[in-house]
Image 1 (cartoon, one colour):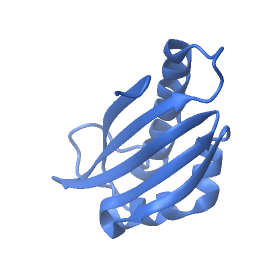
Image 2: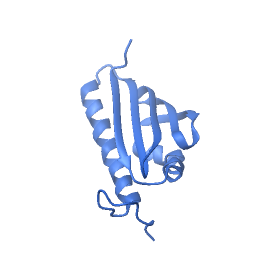
Image 3: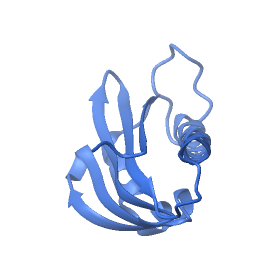
Length: 127
């Protein structure tokens, strides 16, 4: 049976994959990005990212797969889960999690890309 919520997103970030992997490996980041979920690392894939099992508002799994691409990284996000409350609306939860993820990944992208215009090679890190 398919989960009630099955989301996927791809975002390109011009940054070192090692920098992104270290960032997403920090448990404080997962708590900040998904405050209504309890995450347990299911698989640490090193430079390729992490897979978690999730509990809390949803039960299932989520993953950040970091794929090297050109001068940056494609950040693939997957969320496959069911609401734990029978009154929850999967469509509303899916929208809320999608918007929250896009907000956070674009905040990270802006910080790591340090004002780099599109089509310009990677800039040195901000001091």
